Image (cartoon, rainbow, N blue to C red; front, side, top):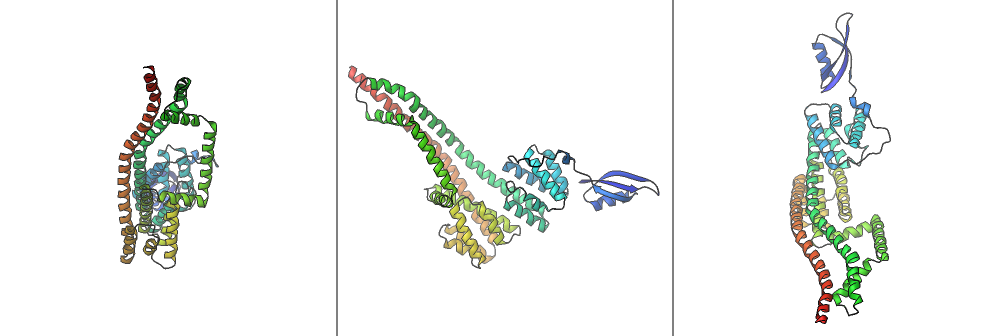
Length: 403
């Protein structure tokens, strides 16, 4: 509830001042009148956090996606409980420990207070609130169901964060093993092996082939030009990926990867279908919804095909049929969308596609995580085994010659 400051007449001459809590100005007037006073002036009490407003021009720091999700859910609960939006923003502001998020809430609060809509005030921070987020809020404001829409946004974001968390957890251990293993091998090849090999070379005898290979690898790794060349290649690749041709080529390469290509495609399609379903369910026209949903796709090839489907729909064609004609998307998706369009239940079809691909990606992540660990152990074992054999072979030959 908001706090209002008022002036009221108690009698012909007496004027009283005070504060009263109410959900709206009209309710505050009613409460004052019921107390036997005649209200003269009433205004919303200034929010206490205005004193701690950040300095103008201060650079916005990092705001985690999880913090935005928590803010969205808290705001939905407060508004649904009857708390005015300005008071809700103030409450969340006071509870937040992130200075950057506090800056955002302060700016949004002041914009709303000055008469801007909540959705319009969010557009000041496109890095924090995506076009999808803003469009959903705008639809919620227009339909009068802002709390419900905010809860849907929070649920959608929480689900995406959960999937991303599962993916990171699945790769964390294999990546750690790879870093430790590669670091150990490089250390052995650049520091340990050269010192041992000097002893073998000083004996003047022919070294076994594995030992000669190991010495060559060690020599290459210690050459500065190799690292300079590798750095140049990395810089060139990064610059190439910034160009449109480079991004498209890399996107095609990713989609053609064995096993991983299908995983990348299904991940993007699941995200797109789930987002589009959410937008259409909240009353956003399908063309605008597709235009907002396309940027959530990460692969440039998939994105360009979806834009072509958008143009086909804009010209009066079928969205599902254009998806089917592209040959890039699975028949399961295109057939369901065609049926959904014909039956008038496109959102159900989108939800079915998203759920199916989300399950597929979850299973793929579990399989990859279970296979990567033993695969990494096997690869590292083979490399270390080769190094050990290459080091021991000259020792065996020395023993044989000594006998």
